[in-house]
Length: 389
Image (tube, rainbow, N blue to C red; front, side, top):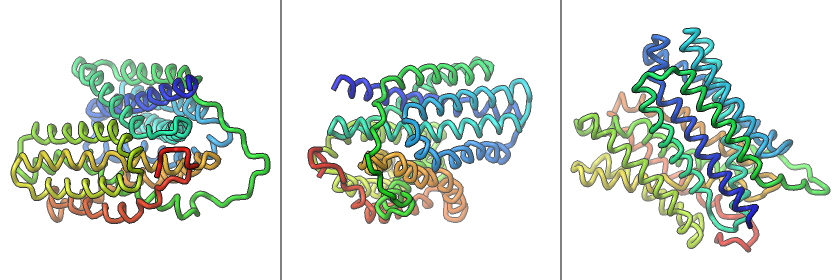
């Protein structure tokens, strides 16, 4: 148990560091835009370099983990993330080059992608060894890390700290910490003596069903990240700070759900809890859209955040139920899930142009129907010694 406890703490810090790096980059995007003299459209195209790197990295991450270890791949992610943050900052501050910045963003996307899959695989193994649900708390750690990154980024932006100092310094710090904490990761499991020829995880019905569920929950989470503040401002004529406050309430509710959710998951099992959270997410969105009064809308945001909290981390756990194929399946589910973060915002924006930002959220609520239908796929395939039902 001391070994598993050390691995648990190492994984928690790894999640937090990933969130810290992400928030660090986001906190300086306005400076990146002004430094390169880009408009919003050009900035959006530049940011696609991050998405391109992640999309390329996610499908191959499982194979890398199987050939080496989760610790080795997390370290690789740390190296690429540090290189990406430093290159992007130099591209703006020293080179004034969109191409150099794009190369940095691409490297950051590669690093973030492999890092994400590896830490989820290791988190699932720690969860398996502990015999109780803990994955949602690891994802809550990512949220705490992003909050810390923003807390550092705000004063750094306020004093106009040089980008290479801020972004490059955070990248180096994260790399050093990842290398150190990776030593506490659990050793990779020994391969079976007579491995069977198995089909690709992309052809497994259960894995794809888990991916559909994760995609739906990721869209419900991502739509709040991208559109909740604007929906409140546009739909209710609220002031800007009110929209930001609404988003802060959502993040707080979602993080709270990830901290307390494991208790419910261990008591009632994955499927019943996720059916309840899918219903809660849909109900919360409906309250936000049709509530009218600020109390009702506020309550809807809280319910929405709680409902969106568990789908993604539980999907990661479900994909990794079989330790022999955990890396491949987590890679597939991550790739499907992150497609929501790439395709969701522009599609919802197009719909919002036609029906209004607030009413467009109804399409997100409708996604809870396929989410609920695919929830049965997350029932545990582990040995009955765990508490899952």
